[in-house]
Length: 508
Ligand SMILES: Cc1cc2nc3c(=O)[nH]c(=O)nc-3n(C[C@H](O)[C@H](O)[C@H](O)COP(=O)(O)OP(=O)(O)OC[C@H]3O[C@@H](n4cnc5c(N)ncnc54)[C@H](O)[C@@H]3O)c2cc1C
Image (tube, rainbow, N blue to C red; front, top):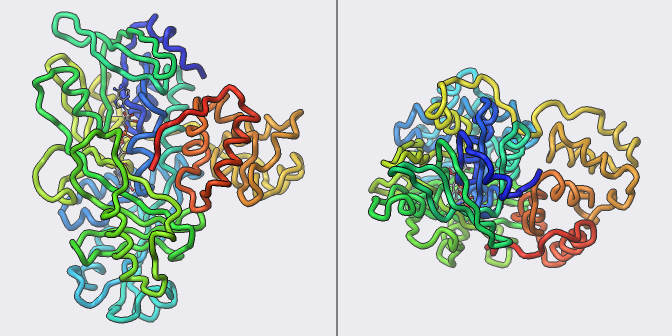
């Protein structure tokens, strides 16, 4: 797949999508599937914005029950079922526990009612049955929890995903259906004809070359950058998005076997401690952010908040900064309303400017398919998609043990390839035929082989070493990330893909 922007400028597209996060990617996927000619432009790498900085949950959002957002919870639970079905390699069911302590703002009866309602709303989309847990049961399931003041708890189900890859697989699926997609292609101006938007000016962020592109409809799915594009269209326009920052901490050690949803003592918000790639992920915060979205970062007070709250519930761990392998910050592109950030509805919202540009804002990762469907239904004859597919959808063929023997690779590697690429995994194996060097592991403790680097560049449109390391191989927020491990990967990338650009973005 090529990102040749001069080719893009030869056509007048039915739809031009700005922003290659999950929403833009899915819009391009659905629109291309309906036969529209589509272009998708992303100024960084696909998914490098909010769509790789989420809590990585495909969830109904049990906490939205408190805000009486029942329709959003139902929509999210229905979408959760669809994602579990269409992307089983990237979206997995996850068991959650909510421990309740004496003095918590939400008492045990309320939590019991919450999980009961959650399952009732899910109906046939339920993953597994909720359960009430006694204090003893809780201590047996999570022995690290503070015993003192523990009243009991509840268990329920949601799902966990790989956000960056889910986004990428939507982009690749769109491209497979004929959409022209490009990363590192920044829109810097709108072209107008008679007051109406007729196209954009775009800059290749590597060569610096500028191009003009024409389209009948333009749709901005720019997440936290929406206000910039709104003002690019009309310098006097009001801001539309309120950005709130959320950070996550990745711990090398495993804090808990289950996902935990914990009410914080400091501000009564809810945060998660999640099992993550053999370690744990703690998140998130929710504070207003007014700076440049390109420069959002993790601050010491954000970290302290999560460390202190986790230490309160897991006192024996004496968690400290040295236990944190990495941290990352993202921005929620919320509809611009006043009030506490956690109380702002997560429903998406579409609007059109005087010049005819469509914008989509708000929403959750979980509901991305529905958001995209609503957007495409604004542009072409409305239709409800009954099924959904991304690049790796479908059956991952072959018995892992037999495939392992056929290719002379560890079964652990075959299983890991199936988990990452779904039905596409034989394409990585095919690269190793005739080139046994590509079967080599990059570091001995991870089931990742050199063929995956070649595949990232040849098929998955990786342009820089960061694109491969952070998002294609999902190592950006790995609990096993160390300087030495990263060096080994960069060396392997330079060895098997010498043309790849070493320059990347700055990450927390
Ligand atoms: C901390 C945090 C945790 C979250 N956790 C969850 C969760 O667990 N589950 C859930 O369902 N939701 C979650 N969300 C919400 C979810 O992540 C977002 O709703 C979703 O990722 C937004 O996607 P997007 O495509 O709108 O934005 P983005 O992913 O930010 O994509 C917008 C893209 O537009 C590009 N762009 C901007 N300007 C231009 C330009 N001029 N030219 C070209 N491209 C441009 C940007 O580079 C960016 O990649 C979380 C959000 C945060 C911040």
